[in-house]
Length: 317
Image (tube, rainbow, N blue to C red; front, side, top):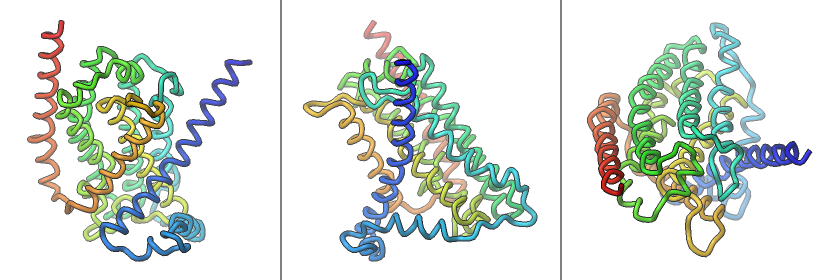
């Protein structure tokens, strides 16, 4: 009975984090972009500092009509938002927030996380193919191209952290982490974070959306709550990417004075701020620039990091 209760409590906590943290990231994006770009709307909705902007967006999505195009594959069209969203919930189950604070500690947790995150990208491909819209299909094909290009540097960079720690368990990687890993694994951290942004199709890697060319890419035909689920998947992906970067390269719950889970959250939302800052600061890459960055920039850097990690491990005995 105690074991069942423990599992139930862990599931409730993971579900609560999944429902709350992406909304906090969304509200944070509203406020940060409002300050950086002098956007007035998000600063006034509801009164004090625009606290009701996220609520207003939710009400707007709920009120919109749910439309499915006549030429769409209805089953795949309806399933795509769930395929884009649910993998991030599954990933959160194996990401540690503190010592012993993890849903499931898998021995091959890193492989599991990378495999499941790859499934999430398929939601955009399914949405583009099933919409019966050439612009949506083009956005889905661009999503597929980015998945193929940026999955390799993402995996190579994550492998460097696993090699350094000598384990594929995410809590094990955090427990093995030392402060001097920050400069040693810096290249891998940058590669992992950059490749993760590209897989989430966040600016400046948002060519699959590119509203000036293909409207909203694979999400063009989606309305109402289905479109809101895609937006929630994006913010959930930001939380997952920030959490994994924290666990693999920033020491997870390690830090002075404050409790471990507090340090984890502080690091996660510091990275969320960086994600928003990058969106505001950099223009969208062209498709050729995007592919060139992956194959001639990030992949060689990830291989350099792997070689450096192997060298340090050998010298350290």
